[in-house]
Length: 96
Image (cartoon, rainbow, N blue to C red):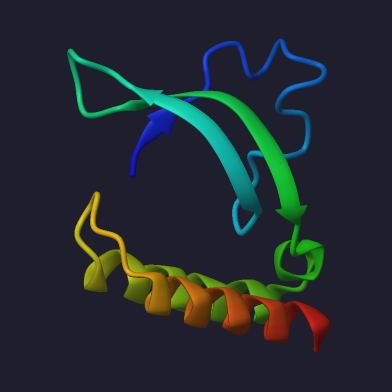
C-alpha cells in the first residue's frame, strides 16, 4: 500500500531511522477518504535488516525479491503466506 508520514523529517521520536527500505515495521495508520494514500501516524521497528542496506550484493538480491512482490501482489491485497515467505527470505539474507 502507499502512504505518507506527515512531519516525518521533523519528528525526532516517531520515525527516526525507521522509514528505510527493507525495514520490517508495525505501522499505525489511517485511510484517507479523499485518496488511496494511508496516513502513517507511528512506526514501530521490528527488524532493520541493516546488512541488506550496506552490502551491495545483498541489496541487489533483496531488491529482486521486492520487485517480484510488487509484480505478484495487487495493491491492497493481503497474502499472509507470501508475507511470511518474503520475511523469511529477508531474515535469511540479513543473517548470512
